[in-house]
Length: 166
Length: 336
Image (tube, rainbow over all chains, first blue to last red; front, side):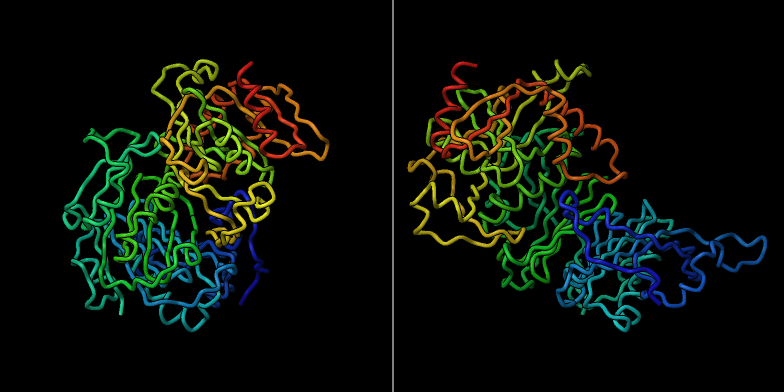
């Protein structure tokens, strides 16, 4: 479901698209985190459209501790037309960057409890569901961990092949 | 197959301190080629301060070498982060909150001195500068006997062609497009006093001239313009090509004159004084928007712009060629 018209973004003083609007705000129910999603494209989460105005979708028993909160800010980037490339992860301290070339740029910041993403038009619904959404979930696990991340944590949390400089 | 790059100081044993446009860059890498390629900027070891940012560069020899820097570089930013990719496999993350840049590069990039010196380090200062007390200003800059002439104007006003003409008229070219201002530590909040503590810097980046510059510099007709990051087609001139002899590089200077270039169809070239607030409004309105996550950087940039705007400023209306305008400016600077 796409409940917002997405258009190409142009601002000569914002060449990095930092201020591209993300007017849609919904909760994404995950078992281990309370995710608030800010986006310009709810087609990423078709089921989320129905609860777009519901600010308390998380179901918990009274008295249960709330899971940690995390912000997902995901921008559908109509100006990025490159195809998806093989995934790569750059991990440095409290920051992980997950990319599939320019068409998929995601950063997870542990200190700020944020997952920030630009998704180009090459990532269709299937790719988002099968590849990007699982990556977002694993990055969220990284973000909400209370302890300092280690190489073992990173390898556990993310789908990594044998190409690794560790 | 997902490739994982773990970047920390233990896998980056080679280190150097770089001094770039008044900022201190603490470089760490695993590549002797990167260390050698950036040697122009190496400085003596120095303690970390609030003007230091980290640049952590991992060479991964398995990355493909077939990237094209000028046509395949892609930038995006959100909150305190800026992403850059080169081709499909090289990636940089600029973390403006923690003043750290991390990147994974191919051997082709690692050993390409022109890539680092003419493109990537200037871009890095452009992105990180405001977080380490260095303000990028959309302005050309030339030096005359230790005093800097800043030449501002809207895109297309002819800053670059006039800069080349001024360089051929006896000025030293510091920059033709982006100039970087740094301030020495000062307790004074008064921008009139702060202007005396400013230094302007250039990065010896090549000069970009649009294809129509061939009207003023016929020797360009034998060259082929190239595509740049922003999709613009332009000639590229190294500094030593501008005057025909190897130039003595001038990389910093004290600001003295601000000129705002206004091209007109009327013949002649005249100078009219403008106020500090007009100068400040121009620089503020042409500066990149900064995210709310970086309030200190935005405040520092505004202070630097207010300080530089207190230099004497004039509007230059010229309908003359760059060469004639350059001679008029030279005469003006000798009298003011």
